[in-house]
Amino acid sequence: MEHYIPRPRELALEQLKAYILEHHLQPGDCLPPEREMCRLWGFNRTTLRSAIARLEASGLLKAVQGSGTRITHRFRISLQNLSNFSDAAAASGFRPETRFLSCTPVACDEHLSHIFHCEPGEHLYKLSCLRLLDDSPVMINSAYYPANLMPGLTEHDLVNGSLLQTIQEKCHLKLEHGSAQISLTQVSSEEAAWLNLPVGASVFQIVTQINKADGSPVEYCRTLGRADKLELVSSMHWEQEKEKNL
Image (cartoon, rainbow, N blue to C red):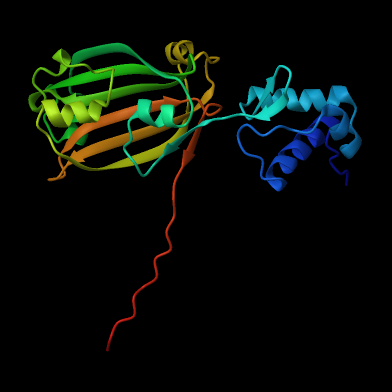
């Protein structure tokens, strides 16, 4: 039986990944000089540079002129908090920008009628926008809102500041809780153009639903995010069953 022998560049790729994990390298940290890495693992520079190029293409590494190859600083999205994109990005050291694409009234289809507990054909607002960090596109948001709950929504500033805060203040709605579902999907030709990706590239798909206190939905949003630019994080808590007094 023949044994599979990895190619040198595949070995170099695995060595680089292992080095990053073992040394707990963080965004902004620099890899050792190429000469040192070649001596450490026995690769020639062509092989090593091919592996580095693949990690650069995936968004993990970035070559910085004059200061070597560094771990990429990716935007971390917390799945626990409904934080404002601009504030969260700025706090992480990015320069955020939101480009308004469209806000149009649409008729509720069968899928959306199930989500919003309404009849097909009822009016919704569909709001689409492009999110950028340091002039680079990272996310497309397509969100739906019940028109009857938000009269005059299009008259408000829907780009600057927090949209959810605008909804609460201007439309007098109290948002209570939400849910999120994360998966992978492939971008269409139009989505690829907006995100500066090849058609069919894999991206994060984050589907969120925000509800009022009574459980009725206020927002249903589908977000497509570049996996090489974003990092999804969640916190975990250990819950132990309390002992019952018998």
